[in-house]
Length: 427
Image (cartoon, rainbow, N blue to C red; front, side):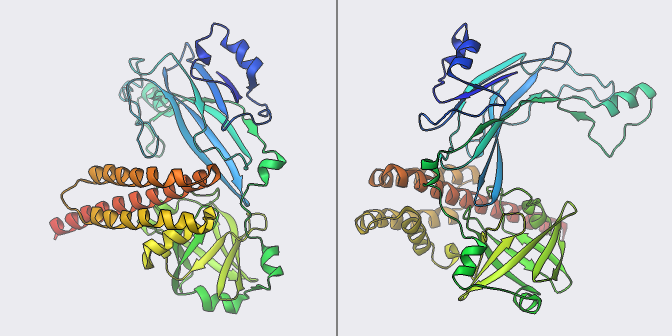
């Protein structure tokens, strides 16, 4: 495996006979820091070849990690893969490769996969103001797990508490990106506990916390990502998070709220010393809640003094979608009055189309998603020229978040219809 990062690589970089030499000359290898920024986003050269005694290669992935206002995130990008599989247009993820494993014999064949994979990839979501790292992961095709091999040799049933197959993998050292002091000036400033105290906020005690949350459910917004979700705390000491869809951007150490919310799996909580304490994978996490005026903010114990969570009585998108969208874009983009007058009519025209799309029973879920993309892309094309480059980047981020939420909503309605249909058949 080879992995290089820089600012000037292009799709032809791997075609040169001395591409390794040029990659060293024009970039940095794994384990190094990217040089000072030159361009709009870093590019990476990645190459992998199979182990001659093992399985073919399934895919190459680049894992990106970044931090913002005390929260850390990771995202997996499929960047090169074998065969003619197509990446999902919304998630970018590539479907699983066919397994050739013979479970009776604990063998496999290299009739799928590739002996070599390579590509040049650029980060499509790069934010120059945020610290980030990138590393490569190379996956082989599925092969028999050692427990299956041993069971077949011994003539006993394989254990049913572990998978029968696995995908061996290799991974690189990371390449690091550190923003310049000038770039850091463009980073959005988050709310900290120190900021709240300076403004006169007060920390809730145990009695106040119990009155606020026990036996209740309320909506919360993560002000770092903009995602909104519902949190419930039962009188019996159980908690859960609801309405976190597959497109929600989750910070590290969040568990799996999408699965737990769907399945109704709860987590015990307790209130002590002015904190709401829960556990994730046996590790305790505490939230301290502060009141500033009529607004409540939450500071999580692992987010380095930031108060990133805000309790909201009702999601803005529920109460008035148009007003919520206009307010969000106006505030976060810093629109002038002239820009507002130009942009609002386009947003006003879009919402009725989206409302009609939700109610349209003649379209399949996939067709609805295609139509959603068509409607939003048309509006984006009209608004983007009215914004400066900095506003355009933020606008694209906001629109992508909103699209993901709509897609998750469409998907949840389909699942509810399927569930209801199954229940009716069983009755």
